[in-house]
Amino acid sequence: MCGLSGEIRFDGTMADTRAVAAMVDAMVPRGPDSGGVWSQGSAAFGHRRLKIIDLSETAQQPMVDSTLGLTIAFNGCIYNYKELRTELEGKGYRFFSQGDTEVILKAYHHWGPDCVRQFHGMFAFAIRERDSGRTVLARDRLGIKPLYISERPGRLRFASSLPALLAAGDLDTSIDPEALHHYMSFHAVVPAPLTILRGIRKIPPATVTVIEADGSRKSETYWTLSVNPIAEDKAISAEEWEERVMGALRTAVKRRLVADVPVGVLLSGGLDSSLITGLLAEAGQTGLKTFSVGFEAAGGEKGDEFQYSDIVAKHYGTDHHQIFVPSDKLLETLPRTFQAMNEPMVSYDNVGFFLLSQEVSKHVKVVQSGQGADEVFGGYHWYPPLLNSMDPVADYAKVFFDRSHAEMADVLEPGMLGQDASLAFVANHFGQPGADRAVDKALRLDTTVMLVDDPVKRVDSMTMAWGLEARVPFLDHDLVELAGHVPAELKLADGGKGVLKSGARKIIPNAVIDRPKGYFPVPALKYIEGPYLEMVRDTMDSAKARNRGIFKRDYVEMLMDAPKDHITPLRGSKLWQVAMLELWLQTHGV
Image 1 (cartoon, rainbow, N blue to C red):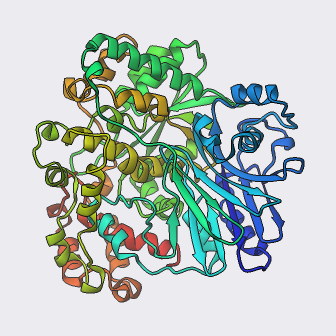
Image 2: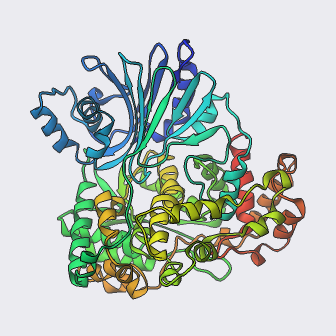
Image 3: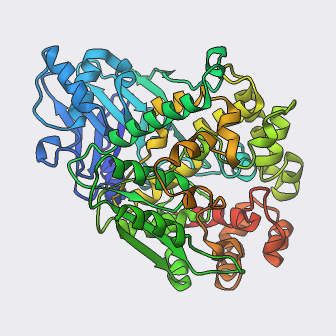
């Protein structure tokens, strides 16, 4: 797990190594162990390294293979790199390192851009061909690892984080109205290639972009997800589906143990992380380190779920660490949390993951985490209403969107209000083949879009702020593809994630499975009052916020006068969403 960056020139000039070095410096937390810059003519690559696999200096990046004429900067982990290495050695390739980075280089030389189809893992990488001047950018199937780009005439820059591109300068930082519409309506999900800033875009998941020396390019989507059970699937019994799902999950968890350092677990106390812990114990892991975080109660709402994580930790005898965050620590930590965000994100648990990652990084460099199970296996409350929907787009918007397009006219200044981009995006996605029923359309959209640009992005941003690698077995693409065949009724059974729950009953305590569905509670941010409201007022009353011209002032005043009265359908604070955008922009100097 690391941070990559680079610049490619198409105008005959040398790449700007100072700009690349600035991006590298901005990503030191992502890779605290080492860093470097490589340049050759019109290309320069930068890298920060977190040592997980092959801890020696032979695996340093940017990595150059002079014999093959290839250079790579890579972020992520290829879990099947040993098997691929053996296959490539059989084809005559010789290796000078022991890690997965060089395996990508050799695989690219052998298979070309199609090498991505060989990889099990999470990844974003850039490869430069010395002799042709061609550059290839690629991102993993489910967008676990980020890859941002910025362009000006004659050049392109890329980086693992959006703030790194800001550090390099020379880009358009004005607000993108289409992205703003998504942010305010689609529950802060801004789908690729958009970001909230006009001058920065992101490579979509499952995409390979080939950029020629003259700047011409071609992008290919190399993987798509079908959530569409076929006739043969419906003939399979619930017990058989349970066995298949648990078998695939066991494989996914085992794959994510590949490391030359210990691997821990972020144990929230929910079904998903508890199941991962149970499967690791079942596989013979001993001395497993597990970690949970909790906050002070507020507004009559409890701020931790320690009672459930304790059940699992005690059951398996893990080396368990509880991190309790008092309110004063929460408030003082928020600015650093905003700094760590790749993009503005409204979920209250950002600060939870940030503080949890800070503590966890003192003990381990790698953790497994339960993100993705709700989207892949139908755990959210908005899926059952879609089972028999006759108007999928409208019904999805009703249960998921924070605001209708009509309401946006009361929220945004006229210059910021364009077309109903969010509803159009959902309609286009739902219209693509590979998901016939409304609920399956929603599951596919949430797995391939919402999950990427909300929970997964959140975990990457917060863990990487402390040089911690988070691995997500529920996003193993083999498991996700299998889940696409499971009939929705089996996923939604038993209050959601039915097929997972039935398998889990043979592994983890029932008290964890049958508990009420929990979220990462940070009640002090849900009920914006006291010092939190003061912080929001100071931000929204600032000259920068007033002059930016995004939100109508009377709307902002209405939210600040009664924060608790304005909650989204997904139980989020409309005031926090508005303030979060401005807080993020000001934190990053925009």
